Amino acid sequence: MTVVERLASLVVSTGPGRRVRVAIDGAGCSGKSTLADRLAVTVGPQRPVVRASIDDFMHPRSVRYRQGSESAWGCYEDTFDLDALRAKLLDPLGPVGSGRYRTRVFDRFADRPVSSAEQVAASDAVLLLDGVHLQRRQLSDCWDLVVHLRVPDAELLRRARLRDVELFGDAESVEHRYRTRYLAAERLYEQQVGPVERADVVLDNTDPVAPMVLKWPG
Image (tube, rainbow, N blue to C red; front, top):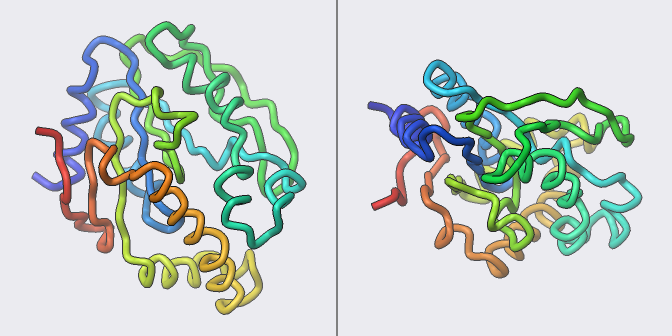
């Protein structure tokens, strides 16, 4: 059985008969969305899946960069609209939630709010939400299961230089932004929260085709 199959089995067995919320947590370029997509395919035939990303709950650029475009604290504190994330997605899928949810409130590329259709989750649905800093204090009571991905900084930078060059102009600018803002914010997250210690599952995702288990429940 592969690690993804083991993880899918764990997800399926979590909170049988009720809605559960699963965090796929990790730094930028750690492979969160890829893992969550793979999980959705494997879990889907066994339980209904709600697939979402924290990237669709961002603040406008004017808020995200009010501490400066290279500020690590700005990245950590100002990037996401955590109130909207809870109100529109996490709380409705919680133990006493209505089950009526939205998966998207903001288009970060157009830098404007969007109005996604309200949906109703099945009574045993599984939310798979990928994102950075998901174990922070404002969200810590939202999760039934937390998966945290670890990838060395050198590999994160290699992936970022390939993925984000169009966004930032060239590889050097990508690396500079990651070192000063995103990776520095990840260090703040580690200091503030201790995500490895708090997570239920920790995977080394240096090789996303074959992640390695570093921590497992029990």
